[in-house]
Image (cartoon, rainbow, N blue to C red; front, side, top):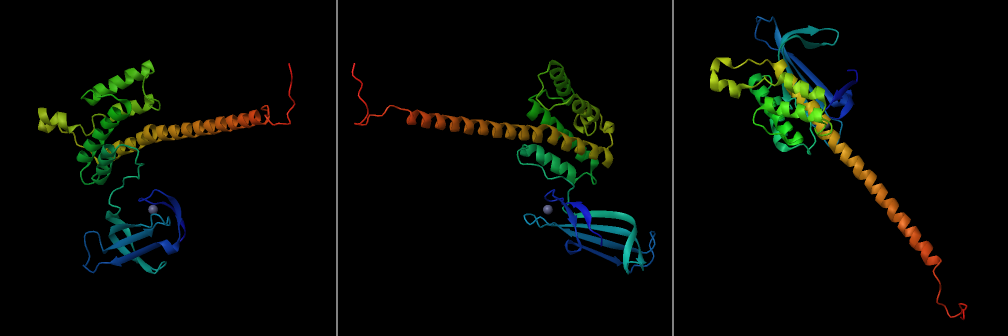
Length: 262
Ligand SMILES: [Zn+2]
């Protein structure tokens, strides 16, 4: 096996996977010839090299299988279905300064994306609305009104730092995906179908905004705190220096000091 680039789905650390950290196992299933021909499965396991994480990621692939003499092993060459066994969800590791309610909706939206894209999109949509409420401080009840208000603030220059017009446009573009709540009340047939690709688009928008809004704000706050702390240290050092100079040049009250008579 040649070393390859990999990002751990548990800790998000980029790394190069070497032979010692990866295993691969394929088998032909002796069930006769199926509609997909001879079938089998492949399991791939990769252990994270980050010692703080040290998790094993597992995937299973099922499909048409053949023996390859080149590698002296079976291989699935036509995948019928694949499973992400560990971790189950494709959600990315997010920092804990993002509000927990948003992270919960995001994680769940990722977890059910393939099995129930409609439910996933609904959760993702709720997460986007939650971000506008939390980060931008706008709560109007309906997402469409909140986007309008955010656009208004953008034009007036009162939107929070980091909120770009393009991002608000993107939220507006996907606003109807997963909006089942409102439609259901009126007409059950109006529920718009959602495919996994659309659900994924919403998830990626959330990931982008986590980054552009929360992570960027946190970094800015940390940088400013660092600058302020440097300034405070400098000020303290200058004050100490001045005090020393003052002490050295202060008039002495020793007995042998010259007495000036007036
Ligand atoms: Zn890891």
